[in-house]
Image (cartoon, rainbow over all chains, first blue to last red; front, side, top):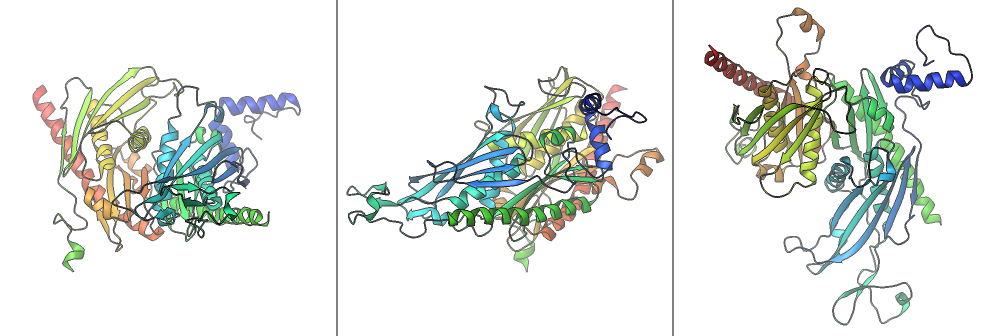
Length: 305
Length: 245
């Protein structure tokens, strides 16, 4: 199917090498021949995302964590809570600090000693989307108005970068916030906040400050889908190979109320028809429903345990 | 009624701040331009094409490098994001195959930030690329739109307005090339190229119809900016000719 015109490769090893060589020498033509048949080299349909799994709580030392796999793209998110003094301008809100790390193990493009160029950009976009979507009510992170509030450090590590990094990172962040269990804290004799360990919990001597509300209410969760636009074709959830061959990427973030949180396209081909953007939004909507279902399932599975 | 239609600085919803653009200000750079929209001003300098590309870049194409210099202090994540958006936007308008295995650097110096900074920087760099004579497919024109809490679309917001807005959008549209050949005109088919979207960066929640509304408003405003750019480039081209003869 992928060999050159008029040439019939023999079955067996010879044909395998031929296809692999063609893929490396003419990557764009290789993809275009697949697209003409409405299929992708990994046998997905064009609008189909890769299989996605969410594992909640893989990091036991963190207050909330999630491991997300979209195909081979693997992202680990963990949240650590620390008590801080809120600023005078906003005494009854906590805050969130987002960091995205791309260690050299995640991709052959990232070299040791040289941080990946995209990592700070993804971190910035993540924090923009998380804060502007209203997913977290920062008031829920307050402990004592004007005195103490939670500072949530959200650290996201990319373990395997095989395309659609932002989608995976955002999903892991949403999952980690859903999994977040706020630790019990109480005031000690000096008026300082200390965390209450599990053994001390039953003793009458310590009175926790936050007995209720140990979970954040996630009212609207944002979900994202990256698409590649190549001519008349739209490919959902690209792999890193697809991302490197075709350069028009559109990332759509929709929240669970179907509102647009972000529509990000930087450069690439000029999108002449608004219908292309609408098609990307449609695909993102389907994906949003799919992802919220996967997240709901993994959350309910955790409650059963 | 008045409060809805008039903004803090007396502009109407669709009104842009006064635009200024001057070229060829720096004599060491291969091309430079200063672009300002009200109190937001950016100076862009272009060096190149210089021989060789960085490791990891495709040597069969020209490579574009953007260095963002903030008004004060170190560059942070916001500036890194701007660098990447600028680079990808400029890469898409340059004819990269004309000078393969070269690097063109664009240095963006922020002079003043009073809102719509990214759009201002894109406009400045685009004019600087023209000034340097870098081969381009077409020009790119950027506009910043904002959506108020009341659902109105305002154009070219200031910093004060940006803080109050529900969402802020930076949109980049192509400036249509004028051609004496009918061939290129017929190539555009039914949809004119200026209707296309090069870059879209949004922050804040909005509905899909709101986004489309912003696109329409931004596109109309961009035709005005396009005319301004074209007039500006043509007038300085004539001056150049007059000096040469």
